Image 1 (cartoon, rainbow over the protein chains, first blue to last red):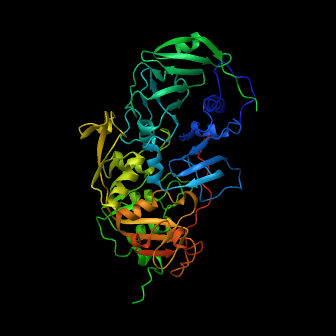
Image 2 (cartoon, rainbow over the protein chains, first blue to last red):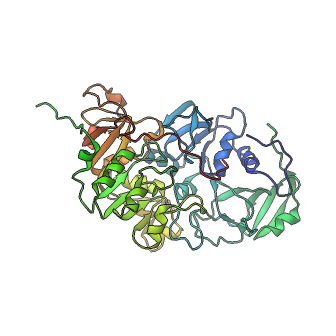
Image 3 (cartoon, rainbow over the protein chains, first blue to last red):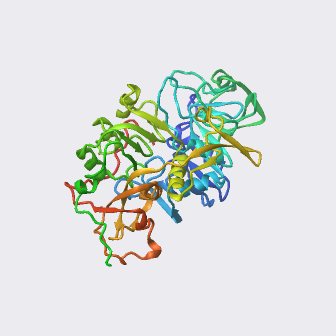
Length: 230
Length: 249
């Protein structure tokens, strides 16, 4: 669940990043969460907002990850985790699930990614030098959801920036990302630069600029991310 | 004339006549809906030069289960058509990768929704369709696109298959199927896309009429053979998926 610790100079923890993004969901949205960090959004206690979580495998209206011994072996989310169903849940087949996606009924998809560019391009299916890739549902979601939010660690394990002027890896979709949450802050791709809207506690703008591969514009009313203590 | 039952007594009989070179679709998304018993039977039967259609290439489960990664490792596979030909995390290594990188097995990487719709189209008598998915990406390079209402779409072709292996909770002797929860996933569209669908089923095969017609998820028109999964250890009944090593979520 949500962290209770004060964020370190390295910024937010994984659940805290997800918590910040989940608070951007609006009442009644239909939300698709990708594999990995995005699924942590369904753990965030955002209250009864009428959010419906949609998974690519046709599970509509799922809740949190179930504890050991409470799992239903016939039921997983897009990450293969055993989850609960909320009242009013429904199950459809894979083609109908992607009909929901392609017809523009997903209000937001949250995707875990490798790179995002200031022009809204992003990459999450193929790493440098790999022959194969893992597209899953990301290209359908990125092309067709009303909004694309992405969530990622601000830099690679060896410290290289992942918020870039242009994607170096093969893109998943072009010009679609509107909100970027990292351990260091909350950003909007603004064409030539990233606009820093909110900054993680204990992190400096200079630190963010040094870790970003594109220009960073600081929003006039820059806020500090409120870390949930729930 | 009385209807003949579609029930087959065991998995070996259900897959005995599958020829080399077949194109076979396999349902399943993570464990639910994956026809592990049929895959094990096909591995034992030994058909070769197969083309496999599935969401992923398998091989990630620990301990290992008979997913399509087993068929790859047994040298039965020429090509896979999947939404994942690499692990979702770049640091994970799949058994499939070795065969793919050496060129022993070919792969066609298809976005997941496009894969489902290509199967559905094949089952619905639609030869091709246009989708906005993958426009502007490496996958669209050199391929036909067309503008509709000011937006660019990519052509995709129906994906008919010779056989579909599906997994359901319940069937009757007519081949009508019911799935439970996320067991459904690709199974209905794969059954539609196939010349012959073989279903493995958890519960005893019911007589015709025992399933409420309103509650049938896949019509028996799309299903030719049904096999009841025997109790373990003869039948394969996967438990909970083990957490991946190092997984934080």
